[in-house]
Length: 374
Image (cartoon, rainbow, N blue to C red; front, top):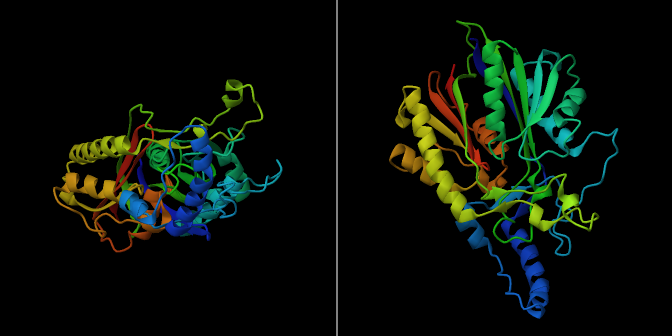
């Protein structure tokens, strides 16, 4: 078995940002126009939102999006993106390519050095051709393979898990994993419980084989990787190719009941418990205790959830140095969040120190990798 390392990472955060105040103003304007209609139908009124509720519920103050255009329009409440021709680079591939190039630069590699491209994200712009193949072509990677995969917010962690297996077995030398997350395109901004949660971001990383005895100072060796899944509908999206067969109105493409749905309280309870148990068991199987791990890069969905998971894992509260938070300014960037936290908070670690990358989300799903700085 070959040893595997993360030899490079790259991130792209869109320039456009939306504050809680702006989001609340837009949502409440919608509520004010919608409630009279609901009253006329005998339906209960919608509750207005406020920034204090959002911060208390999630710890999120702001989020970045591919485009603000249309999102804050109370009559639309969805991003407005121009359709591209079949011969043009898709929005998702374009987003992924930016972070991919940065990951290659960070690893000191050329596109020709890559053997396999995996596009692992919570949503894909189309079923086929694979977004990964489009990214492969745009980067100029020839002679390699490429495919898409997804596991909700655990997608990047799952991509890392698959890449480690392929590299460790010797089947591939270098694998590029790309996770372009455009959550704004699939979020129901008319839903008070979820309209504030997500933001857009793209991350990429290279998993590379190294020889026995070889060292790459400053890089991280991947010591073990694991995934776990259990069926739950508490985080769900029903948007898919069979939707038009479910309705007589085949022109009805965008349906709010097909967008991201979440039973927040259930998810919080279930995932907190599952993630805590998973982390402790995973470390134990590697002969480590939670105290042996210098840094935890957890999924960036909810600051209260992460704090509680770390309290259960360590037996005491963890500060931002032990378990960094980036979601306050970025929102939940799905699969990208864990990698962003790692990218921005690893340089100060000392050689030999352990770190844990761990993401959790829809499925339910959990993915984790134990790494050590070289």
